[in-house]
Image: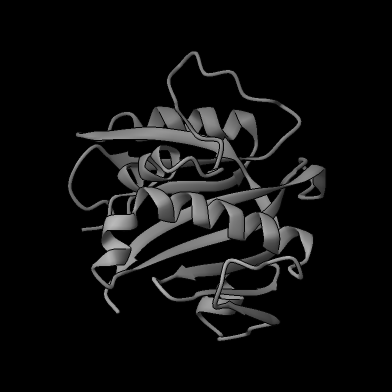
Amino acid sequence: MINKLKGLSLLKELGLPAVRWSFMDEGTVLDEELLWTVRTVAESGTDVNLPRAVGVTAEEAREKYREFSRLPGIKAICYPYFVALMSGIIDIGSDQTIIEACERDLWNLVTYGRVDCRYIIHSREVSGLPGPFLSVYRCGRRAAVKMQGFLEQGYHLYLEWSLARDCDLNKRPVGEPYLVFYECRVLSA
């Protein structure tokens, strides 16, 4: 079952930096200088292919919220629209961790198979990892500790991440880059 709200909640429970989402209502205050993403989510069940608005102004986000709020059994969440400087996955198993990354959007890696760099870690010695990858590794290990029972049964913890920046109204990156995770799955070996 795929459910975005449960996935985002799991990332929070695991202590991972996730998209800075919040439930949206008529009183939600949005920074007028940034672009926004508004997603519809179901509290339970599958929520694939629900309506969304990506990279919209604050006013457009409020309009979309009013439109989406009329849908039965659906809630809206919002978060700042971001562009990825670099994206990747971290796959944590009981005996090794693999970090793969590509420039820009994760789509380049998961759809087109473009891997610009790969790190395979067999021990916990990570002194040679460059800064962003060390942050990804540390976050992944923190999540793995909380999911240790699955790892001991031979499962893998699979996380998708980006090094991102928010966007101004012209889709230009603004602010400091930040690490964000947006997908967490437990996979069989």
